[in-house]
Length: 210
Image 1 (cartoon, rainbow, N blue to C red):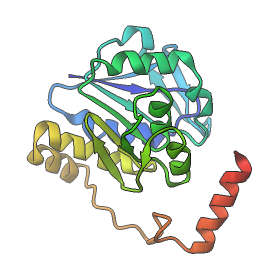
Image 2 (image 1 turned 30 degrees about the vertical axis):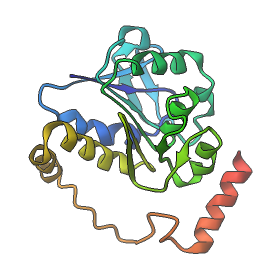
Image 3 (image 1 turned 135 degrees about the horizontal axis):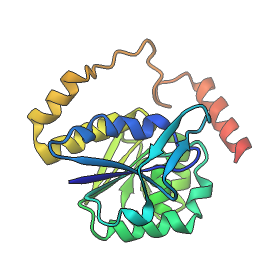
Image 4 (image 1 turned 45 degrees about the vertical axis):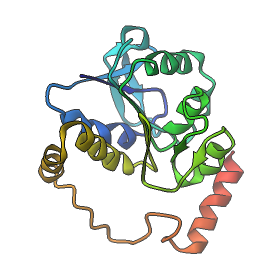
């Protein structure tokens, strides 16, 4: 089973590494990082680089595709090389997945039209404007499409899909061995739980930056 993780300049590192470190533990799985051009690809802060092993043209039939998000994915949402690759490989995937605003790339490729999907909470309105039924759920499965909400939820998505493919015991083993047992110091991880003024501040910042 081949798992292809899409990389592009400005991607969010945890969006890619969360599913990689969970779903990538599938028995006999081959995980490959792909980009338009092989080599280092910088994350959204520019301070970290992942290495793309292969070019998009070299990975034509992955079983699973993982699309990470970015603070500003707009360049990739109009990038024909990325969108054409997503459409092409999606025709043969068993699972097509995304984390955070990665779902906007899937929507831009026309793959989520009429489907339920999630994204970062600041991007749900944008998703709705692309013919997708947005939901604030942490992980959403609609057919073979599995989308995860913001950043850290990629870990949950990886475990969810791992359980679907290899069974609960394998997924539970990975959760145990990675000691994924969240006990955050604050209960502010969603707009429903965070202080209202903080949510409003970030909504305003998002509008100002768009």
